[in-house]
Amino acid sequence: METTSLKNLERNMFRDSIQDGILDIQLGLMLLMFVLPIYINPYLGDFWSSVVFLPLWFAIILGFRAYRKKVVQPRVGTIQYGKYRKKRLKRLNIIILVVNLAAFGIGILSFFQAKVLPGWAVSARFSIIMLVGFSLAGYMLEFPRIYLYGVLISAAPIIGEYLYQNHGFSHHGFPVTFGVLSAAITINGLVILLRLLRKYPPHEHEDLE
Image 1 (cartoon, rainbow, N blue to C red):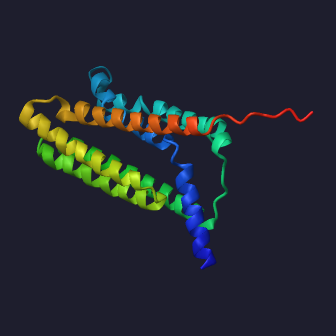
Image 2: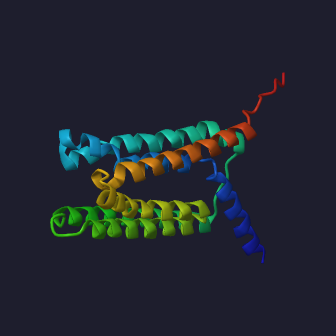
Image 3: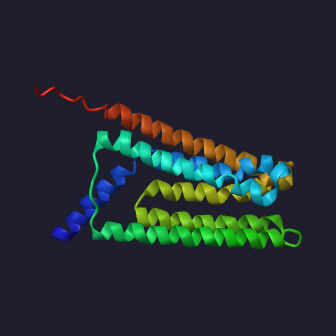
């Protein structure tokens, strides 16, 4: 009974520690990988127009990690996780790696099948892998908002394909669907972060002398 209570307490503390909006902002900015490469593709080609952004995404992740450590954590505090939580986080890293490799493989397969495979099939492939990936991440993190993001992101390719085929939107509707979704998730994260910073102002160092 005591072990269960400790797990519940740790789970609640973990949820609070990632409810600072930074994860939302990172995700929103990462979704731009479905938008920005489209506009530099004519200059760099399919491969390099995507690869060129990898250092940018890496910088975003490291930048917000440093911001959380130097600005957010001193205000809200930090916690040390037990074996249960550490094990789940390790499993999450493995899941993320597998999902990314699967998405990469599907992307290569779809590229070579572009002339014979209907657009709906390509969109459905990415939608399924995104839904599975985000669902597993939401489960491992015990973070309900991730489930909602997973549903929205997995729906984006299908909605984009509908806009492309029925209303003439360019690039399979990705600039619209992922652009709007990126902005919405990023703004939501910024609102959450600003609320948290307002709720927990910087600690004033008292002069003890």
